[in-house]
Length: 178
Image 1 (cartoon, rainbow, N blue to C red):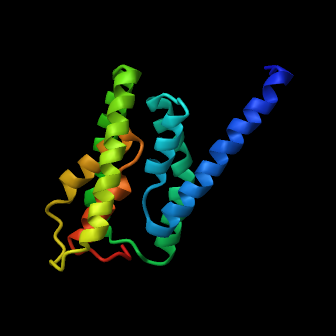
Image 2: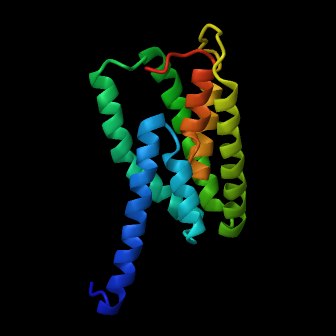
């Protein structure tokens, strides 16, 4: 496959921009444990990338970034396996449903919904940060619906697992380490 030499500057500048956005999004994500998808989705959508392509691109990148983070947590014994085995399957189910719906609707409609969702998610994250965590005893009964909702919103909106699932678990008293 030959690429027109006149296109290289545009390709490199676009790649450089996405590389820079990914770097800063991961910097924030690594510091607070969330927001890679929210930041990346917002920027990709602002540059005209279709929602399904933005979601696929972000989740492909997250395979590596989240994989490295997961390996680190595993090595440091920061995994609550009871929580993991309840949350992971529910998140997968929600993610599959969200990705399926994302590909089945008109891109213009989905882009408007995703932009509204990301704005609401930003407000939600700020409200959670201002309110602070509760001092209740952690419970596992809410984890399955939380996982389905988090997976669905993350797959269909390009971000949301961290802001929805992580902040809810922390807000309900789960240890930040896990």
